[in-house]
Length: 281
Image (cartoon, rainbow, N blue to C red; front, side, top):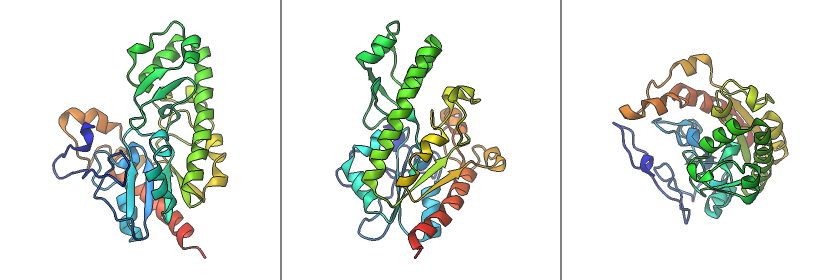
């Protein structure tokens, strides 16, 4: 993946692997023979274009190694089927699990790449029967495909969304059970965590994490120690790309990312939750 080896100015992602995992994570590689915190998630956890994403900021304040196990455009499938990463999380003092979109996982209707979860692989026979009038060979990315399906038929699309939401809850339960009870869910997004239907959200199919509601997240509460919700403030969002590192042709992508100030707010919200759960008597 090209973004893993690009260095812009002073920013280097120092890609590394852990054990037999095939995923290249952001480094430097942390040692696993001493107490550590693990952070798994998507682009925000990885900290694309950010010199010090929230896992680094948490590490500095907590004075404890914090593994950045974020994966750009990653979803649940990138982690739940990786026994090395699940073992690392199970052995952590605490694991922060970023809430990732429901579009990034294989389900009854379509399958995604096992590591690049934004990549669409193929539609199932069920999906092809529902959308008999769509040529699925035209799609390489899940979001592009979903947009086309929505335009074709909103009624049929509701069936797809319901499947993705049910699959997401089931897959999250599986992953959290593998991680164990020492975990915290993190909602890190400029989208509100509520039960507003995705179609009524201002960004609709551009929302992140896509198709996730508060009711879905609350179903997971018995499996985690805490749920931390971080909606960056207006001031943090206004900072835009200030302090971010990217090439000129990536400015559009960078402008859609949560910036440096947003990561600072995520860290500020996570640290007290981590301290309470790790050090509480």
